Image (cartoon, rainbow, N blue to C red; front, side, top):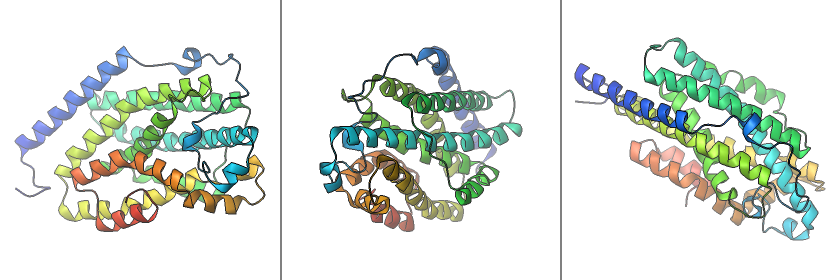
Length: 308
């Protein structure tokens, strides 16, 4: 039987399996979820000598520019990269939530998949509040998305259907999740930042499981031509992702004289490329497993340094 020609029995089995996964995630959410407004001590003072993300994950770590910075400048770079990451996450999670709302509008309100989709929507909403409060706490201005990009981003939710929704969610969540795991246990990182990252990591783990499960089931039923198209366009997300993490606004706020030159230095930074490879490794394995690593995408991921 070819992909896309699933029998009713197989379809029912897939739906049941999705229900089992959704129920498990719902139980996990009941056992361990957070309300960041009350579960994080927002009144605790910041340590002026601690970083906001692990130094080894910073885009300029180890470069000539890094060696010319004093500790205060390096900490400021970490503050601005932390804020940039949170600002980007707010936009991303807003888009995911719009996609989830459209998904549940047409879904069975009795199903556990619908119930977990709504649970994830609530999680993401609380995360946006948490990120906003964290940006306020660290005393920095959020990073605004340029107008042209805002116009494009505002159209994305209209196209997030089926596998597209889960792929978009996974692309944003998986890479960022691994980056945060590289940051969270560094003793040189602010306790507040560590707490924010831990809350996000714990709840995003369930979202990633939900997205991966949805993708596996839909890819198995997908016509070959559609799977081939998806497999060869996913790599373009890597370009967007990389550009988001080496934003010239960050370098300008730190006070570097040539933000564009700093961006080029970050893009060529072997240490940062290694961080990116580690962040993408799990997702690359998943794409290989599900047949979503197309030839074009592989070339793109290699060109930007996410793959060897």
